[in-house]
Length: 311
Length: 260
Image (cartoon, chains in turn cyan, blue):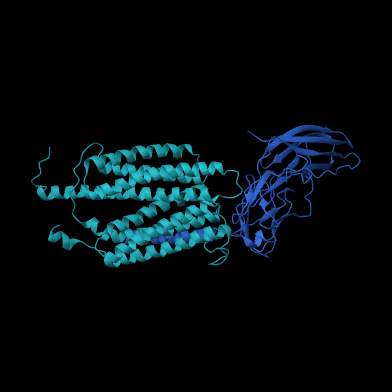
């Protein structure tokens, strides 16, 4: 790392830790949301923004899940506001400061969608939108944690491109495929679509992930790429097992009078692992683009525009 | 800066819109459909017929599923033993409880006055009592909470308006009406997911729910040709054609089988 580059680094360890904690709180929020749906408690609290006309209703039955979800949501909202303000004060990169406030806008929108879905008795476009935006918000929080890390600003060996499509494009395709799959999963959970589109989506994700993992492990030595793809491979295998398990548990307990603990546990784990899979694919895509950009920057330094020969 | 302002204003607008438009206390009363119904024609008791019978089950009875309400102590204490789901209750004589029997067709062109008495649906020991009930279009359904815990009452109709209201212990009864006939309207409590009830809503009073002996009786019926329907939560629906003459008492039995 050059002295000039070192001085350009804007790294605040405690800010980074706070961003990581906010991302951690967000995955807890996703787990809480999955508990609400799996326990059929989405309408256990009929009013919003208050719960039974108060800030703290009796935490019994489905109210525990629904109001607990609201409380964790409010806490994540507060953490997001603090993170945005902290970024605004401490961060030199203007785009990152802006991203902090986009996070606030998204978490507010997410809360409003949650309220609409309760007040209008779970209209499926809103419910699926709420579930999908949760995933995007988690990715945003994970991205903020990544951008505030020291490693993000350190120079690393640039990307040596091999193969078609390029790794940046392949990594984006992976993240998109996982996101579409999560949306399809939300349509299954909210009983909009059957299981078939979700199964086809799983097959597509497996193919794209396998392609990406193979490309990175065979052709790239950067730790920043190899770590996410290893996580991607493990999470995909885990996610397939959890998906199958939750589906079978759902079938086996279809005539049960109430949600069964095993089915709830498997389904919630499936949702959480899906969120981690998406976040990992987004981290990979971001790292890939960072390394690709570094190659472009090095090329620019070595061959300034005036000296470049264009075919 | 502009981007942040726009985002903030958009969020605030959405929030105000939802608070302004949404309402936790949805009206439980529905305006009845303004169809030009013919005037109620009195039934002549001298010619009225009666249909009675029973609803039996054929096949291997499914295992009754136990409800776990240990976490809800206030409710668990109201039961002396284990509580089972009421979606399939087989009586000792091989008949079915909670089957809804009704005149499905044959009364078109007639109208019937709405009964002044309310149909009562109670929440007791975190169970709906009765499990299946019938009401006429426009008739008041009064939902009580006899429990020392909070419930929400949430009918999920297809032809009527859906609503969801909370009911704390000791709260006033919730009174609701349904504007259109519908077989059947599930009523749920999302606080206690095992709590489920069904309301059959009809334009006429010719319906019955089977009890501990699996029998039903539909009386004061004008002579004519009818389709008699039966609905059961787990076994689905069935129907039969029946003709009754003046003053006739006819016995018909339904036999329901487990699908698949």
